[in-house]
Length: 181
Ligand code: IMP
Ligand code: MG
Image (cartoon, rainbow, N blue to C red; front, side):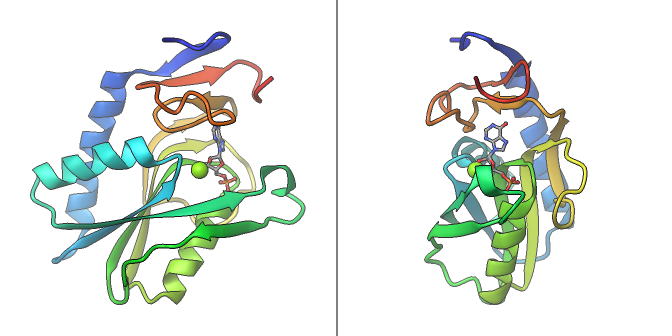
């Protein structure tokens, strides 16, 4: 079902193809041993499900965990507060970690979580985002892996929501005009 006032931006086959390519890139760059996937909830649940299965099909041994953070989006420019609501339970000391998120916007969420995982002793931390929004002056380094670069429009589907809605859509839709009405 297409939500009203949204237009298809990235179709299911394009997402599936890009997930396969990303898995290939990740495999080429990884070391030996288990790769520890950490998905940021709730937005990355669908992407993580597909990416982890693709890595598994190709024989990558995985450890998986999730984390929930809240980013105070209204305040993001002024205070930049990101807080951890639910932490991982795996011990990541000395681990090769791949942090997975749905979308990179200001960069504050990933910057904060990257620091947190560093403090927990991860040996290596790479970041994989499905989408990267066009955003001048973003915080932190670029993710090691990016699915698609998009404009400034607000997007939903494939895990991304608008006030809890539309996460279940199998493709990605964009709202015209930039922010939800
Ligand atoms: P950042 O800390 O500004 O990079 O925020 C990233 C988070 O904001 C993502 O994990 C999403 O939860 C949310 N977000 C940013 N842009 C969108 C969008 O277009 N649609 C839905 N959620 C978004
Ligand atoms: Mg999110």
